[in-house]
Amino acid sequence: MSEIEFHGVAKTFPDGTTAVAGLDLRIESGSFTVFVGPSGCGKTTSMRMINRMVTPSAGRITVGGNDLATVDPVRLRLGIGYVIQSGGLLPHRTVLDNVATVPVLRGTSRRAARAAALEVMDRVGLDRALAQRYPAQLSGGQQQRVGVARALAADPPILLMDEPFSAVDPVVREELQAEMLRLQSELRKTIVFVTHDIDEAVRLGDRIAVFGHSDPNANGGSLRQYDSPRDLLAQPADSFVAEFVGRDRGYRGLSFRTADDAALIGEIHTTTIENLAQVRLETGDWALVVDPDRKPLGWIDAAGVDAVRAGEPPRPAAGGSLYPPGGDLRQALDAAISSPSGIGVAVDDSGAVRGGIAAPAVLAELSRQRSAEDKARCAAEPRG
Image (cartoon, rainbow, N blue to C red; front, side, top):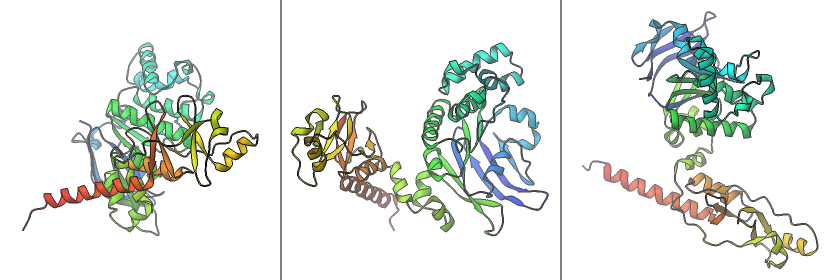
């Protein structure tokens, strides 16, 4: 068992700064828990107390019921994976030897550790051709994957991640987040992940711990709310949490609602680039341009068609986001409102058009789900 519990934990540094005050928290074994909050609110300090890189001033932390204060810190750290910003890789070692570091320190032969490291590289999506390169020869995203692979190499039950994706660009960050979700679905580690980004927290976490400043005029913080992403967005505990998660929390909350029953527009006007000159559109009308496999290329309006007839090259407008199979209400609504035509494009598993989705249909499905939830709550309440 790798359940982590904080019992009245506090941390005050020698200069008198209180970083964490009275933290009581239970992190379930096999869960993905995200610590989120502004700078100086104690989230990183709280995480670093789990592997005793920071020692609590008061209270105790247990893992599987065992008090961490009784465990040798070196042995403790060798059994906990740790990923930091920019990977924290050893620059003079190859990728393979970076990944093999902890198993070697724990007594595994270098040959066996390297063989196992190649398998871990496969697991995190790293090409084996990178094994003999050095960290400076890798992209930022590749370095972070190496950092994750190194943390997983000894198969630790607990994985600590300190803002690991904050130094990479948004596209790579999204790819790494998706990779972490895939890995967690396979491995079921107990993960504690620190971030400033509430969107990252909502995407990754089973549970989110929001930390805030105990005193607005000083550093140091306390736990303000600990909840599932859906409940955090729907019911912030106080004004600080409500402000921190953002005024668009209702929109974010749609990502926890299925759109499977939202009504699709079965047929939308499609055309290929080759047939654009034959398309007839009135002002205000749009047609979706698709390739021979019916994959969307973008929308075009009457003015765009007229330009094609006049001999100009076709310039379909950006098509907005796409609504995939099994998508949620946030994806469906975003597809609708980001489309220049006002109709979101629903695609199948191959990426081909299967219909359209309009914002009113998304809102109608949201209303239906809320009505069903209200009825379920009323039925569950005891009657006087």
